[in-house]
Figure 1 (cartoon, rainbow, N blue to C red):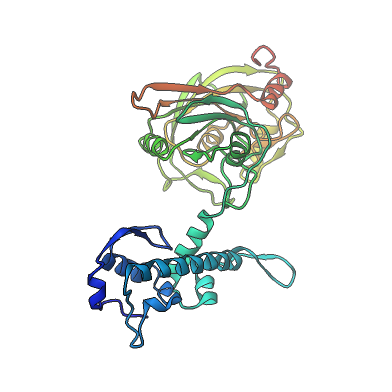
Figure 2: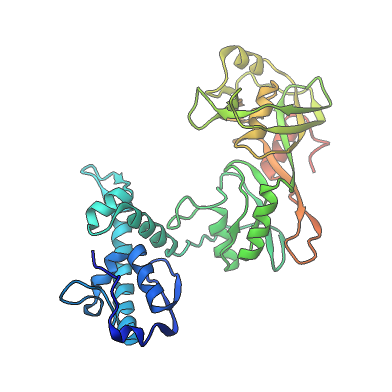
Length: 384
């Protein structure tokens, strides 16, 4: 590795740049030559050798003039882009002999490229992925709120909130890009099969303020759920910690060593005209519970207000109460009534991320499949 501790006499003449210089790897700006050199040595030392101006015969790395710095930067930016392509190719575009994709990480990238360590490879992959423009999807969106700071959507079922990778589409974020021409910033999420209110920020400032609210548990969320059975309570609060399930890897369960989770529930209506005898059990319920669910002839519409935000919280707490959500393929039973778990984010109340910080509320009407399920179960009068 080149030694950047020495400076020539000429370097002292341009200690302060006429304009700030930006690191080709991380984007950090430097106004002083010595600061710039030290940063490059720490951040991306492999780029120091891309230009003849960065080293001498004795191996001492240095620039003789600001013009040398500019010339090196041009070469370093080109090299960094080349490394971006290599990192993405190694991480995501390799296939085995059966043509199955091979996913590789920073260790494999560092080994394949050489001359960089794992830390540099990790940063390289991260910046390469950020440089990929998000895909645009043109499937329709249902805008229920829109101003200069926030956009609110009524999320349909079977759509994820944000893409799993920048180079893939199929999410609500990609639909906003395709339909509105803006790249929204994610501040919270809904499960793929949960419908209802999702808000996005339109600026980093708005996103920061909204993230702070969610961290401090300021937003109030109201969900509607169709559940099996008729509770023997009108209102109740479940204060039960949630941790990983011992049965299914992706599932959660009420566990002693779980994280604190609290949800308020209220029965809005019940129906005595249901038949779940042909429904199929999910992996997380035992035979006794399955039999009880399938012999059930009633169902209820429940208002759910989570005070915390744990994964699958409402679904897990309702199953814990013995009233699983209809159509839940992890914690309940599935059948012809609805093709997903009947859970809808109906309302979100929080402070607006504007200067006046006023309270505001976004509401989402029930989707068609939820309304159809209500009618099929005898809730005709309740369906909008």
